[in-house]
Image 1 (cartoon, helix red, strand yellow):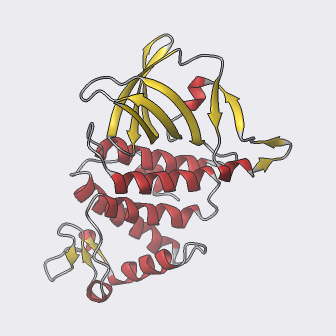
Image 2 (cartoon, one colour):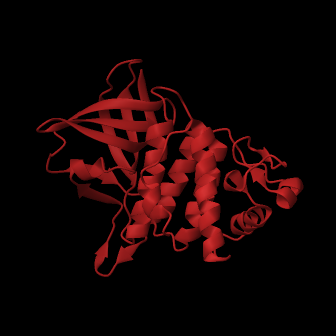
Length: 256
């Protein structure tokens, strides 16, 4: 069946000298594997998103239709639109592909590290050919914000963990009671007397989180408190959303 869908480039593995197996997180069918031949070809037509067409960097601007290398088109975290003949359970073949949003001109090492963090979460969370519409929406929005040079990256990385966890079906219980007593990371419920400090998102941290979620434009809170909040949020994400799997990208992010 011929299918047109948006997708995120999640993983790229060399197959031969001039081909690769590319895993795309598609909006309609979930994670699919595609055999891409001629990946080092000279050019492929790519359509930039309307948000990117208005941006420029000095004398360098992005036009509505550009020529880009095929390899660059399949850059990890790119958001693309593709047409393919869907064959359940098999390797897919792309008929047409165009770029919606790629790595932004304003990218910094911090932007790149958050991008790798979101990619690693997707690589560990996604199952082959299992649609995840809400997770796709959250990931697409995050990558597009990063590609456009998100200014408040410190707030973005915290809200990203909350949004990803929610999309996986493990929302934080941000209630009046959790604001008073804190949240037990292991159970996902309001902290009780048996909750240990290392596995509790404290009431103070919950209140900081709510402030960040309500005001994404301004960095607020004590840096040490923000660091503890991020560490505990990612522990919650790994425990519930990733079934105990660890994230290698966390070590650098903890220093942000």
